[in-house]
Image (tube, rainbow, N blue to C red; front, side, top):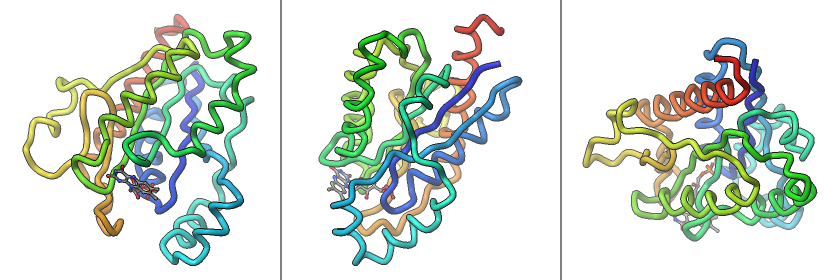
Length: 208
Ligand SMILES: Cc1cc2nc3c(=O)[nH]c(=O)nc-3n(C[C@H](O)[C@H](O)[C@H](O)COP(=O)(O)O)c2cc1C
């Protein structure tokens, strides 16, 4: 039995859809309990973005998802973070959440837990890989065990087409105006990432 947590932040819904695919994969692994939670939004951002219909609609779609707490992080045996790219790296909301978990760092509460990242960018070269790689840094400080996305299980990556996914993370490309939606191949890679982390977390607990 392993507990798998999927904390994500999503302004326009792309990462939310990827989170559901990751959850579906993790739920398929025997004995795993899966929780999807959203990283709390900044009040200032809510106010600023309330004039954007796409943001308002995406937040309504996620209204049933509970907000992430540091207790959730302690509950989890494996944590798969959903992170839309901001200037090539994680959004401030996500960093604030990690900073607020400093008490867990101090007592080593996340050490030895499996972790992974899924991301999204507007463009193919907008930072899907740098977001995963830079997120690796704080996760290493927490002592977590990083799980990548191997080519062997994800043949979709062997392409020159416009599709997300790299050895570092599952990802999707939203388009400059956000009009693209996660493609089948991207959702499959997200789901397989969920499976992989759930299996690694179970193995680390000595369940398999
Ligand atoms: C402040 C800001 C910075 C962004 N920086 C980048 C970036 O560096 N590269 C990129 O490709 N897209 C960038 N984007 C686009 C977002 O990554 C995109 O809207 C997001 O991945 C969509 O996911 P979501 O629908 O889950 O929010 C940025 C968006 C915002 C609002």
